[in-house]
Amino acid sequence: MLKLLQQSPLSARIGMGIVILNILVAGFAPLIAPYGETSVVGDVWESFSARFYFGTDHIGRDLFTRMVFGARNTIALAFITTILSFSFGSSLGFIAAVKGGWTDQALSRIIDIIMAFPTLIFALMILSVLGSSITTLIFTIAILDSTRVYRLSRAVAMDIEVMEFVEAARLRGEGLWWIIRQEILPNAMPPLIAEFGLRFCFVFLFIASLSFLGLGLQPPLSDWGGMVRENAGAITFGIYIPLIPAGAIAFLTVGVNLIVDWFLHLSSGLHE
Amino acid sequence: MNNVLLLILKRLGASLITIFVISVIIFIGVELLPGDVAETVLGQSATPETVAAFRKELKLDLPPHIRYGEWLKDFAHGDLGTSLANGRPVAELIGWRLSNTLFLALSTAMIAVPLAILLGMLAAFYRNTFFDKLISTTTLSFISFPEFFIAYILISLLSVKLNLFPSLSIIDKHMGFGSKIYAILLPSLTLTCVVTAHMMRQTRAAIINVLASAYIEMAQIKGIKRLRIIYHHAFPNSLSPVINVVAVNLAYLVVGVVIVEVVFVYPGLGQLLVDSVAKRDLPVVQASGLLFSIAYIFLNLAADILSMLSNPKLRQSKI
Image 1 (cartoon, rainbow over the protein chains, first blue to last red):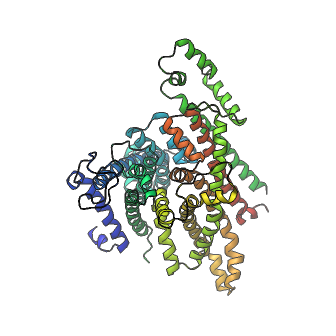
Image 2: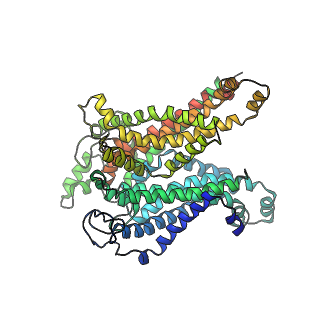
Image 3: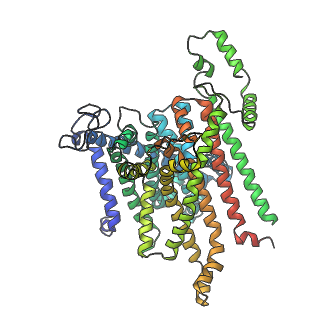
């Protein structure tokens, strides 16, 4: 593992640096932030200074503080959603592959229909009916996103399912869960890990977009997409404050994408 | 030909079924809403008699499957119901905005499609050169950026710094074509960046896939001229995947307008949908959601059919 890290290309190292920086900031948010998450400490849209590293936002809260706490809220929310989406998607995908027959048919047709719907429109409609709470948000996005995970894990598991060791386990009389946990999952891990990075980027951008539309995390909680929305008016006065949270979103997704690229390259077996 | 026709009919049937199921889901979604629409609209002080009368007017007293039939029939006739927020017919609200959204999407497509195909082809032919790496890195970052980040960068550069374009795309019904184009330049440029990035990368991958196949290598070994290989062997075979890429990305474009419309306060269908979601104006959400889904499904259908028709392998099988 350590040797693999030493061989990693520069782009992947930059990516890892970005991700680690973000995780550290998110983890130690209360220690790093100079002010409280929701406390008003200055004037509206003050520019950069030693007191306010990134200036202040539309109601005079310290933007640096909001960014630091925003990292925590935004990343945690996206991470939890991705994990949920993976648990749903991969267990259903594995079940479809192992069981086959009408279980596979029924699941695949339902997933086809959900995937035929544009994701953003689907999410907007669900949120309009159920209202935008954190739980609804997490479950809506996780279910929509799990369709992509389902497709991949079903395809991967299909390849593993025809192997002799699965056949042997079947003949031994092992149950469905045992086969999935002991035989399918360990062999399906490498492609799923790369997919996890991609899905995280997608979920992260998706939540940011919903927050930007005012349907994600609700104020006064800080999250990056919502901060762009709140401060959007500043840009017409030549104040570049909305670019800071928007840039942070872009920065983290680029970082994760750089690592994913390296992973895909490794698992594709192409070595220049 | 029968073979292709059968495939197309199958695909068409599947799309129609999908649209039907989606319309049912949209309808049921609103049914599941906690509380009664009549009570919500009239408020808590309404007497039971007024609620009952209002329910009758909205046809809420009929069983769900009959109401679904009525709703679908009205929808097909262009009667999309009445907005809960301001009591105006939904069709009236949507009509103009739909044409605005299509205008924005269409003008973006006219820039993005040729640009993406050209860049994708160049990157594929000159792969692993500096040009290819530059283009690939740029598009990779555009894909990683949220749409609003690109939008605000363009606004701060072209609108605030250089003062070339307006930062808000306000258009009205009496504007001339030229000033309309001027107003939508920035949103259209933002969408072009995003769509071109996706489309170009997929075009490049599709063409490289074709160039790597055995018959191209064979043609090269036979000593056929490069231009002839491209025209006779590479082009017909990459047509199908490239058409598919274009259509799939146009489907993405139809939905991608939502965020850009909000950034530039452009009066399109996406903006209306987001506003109505916040206000929980369900008839408007239902109608615009269904319209977006239909557009999305039909563009995906077009992608499949066109790539079937342009696939030489499928055309061959008629003999």
